[in-house]
Image 1: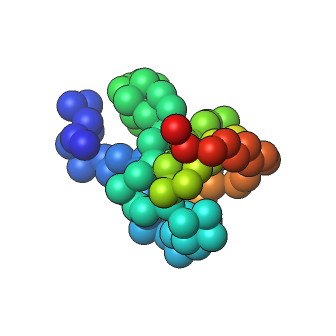
Image 2: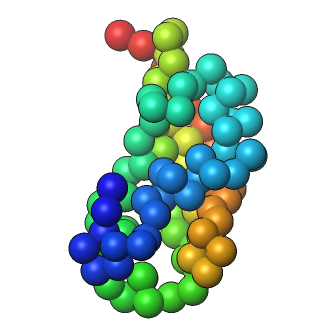
Length: 99
């Protein structure tokens, strides 16, 4: 995903996948890297005021899908745009059987 305002900006998804801790979360819930979405990611990264900051702290919702269930993660995304790093701090998890 490319941001029109800042073409060098990595997507939030890419930033999270760079880190080992988020990959461990996906692994723990048997979610493939291709099978999760960040709610309102487009809105967050299209906000020119947010992109002017070096750091971002934003409450987000991530939905992941495994073979047997849908997992909803609620928490806070911490981004460091200077170093292209992101960490997701989980506040809660909701699991439901896949349809």
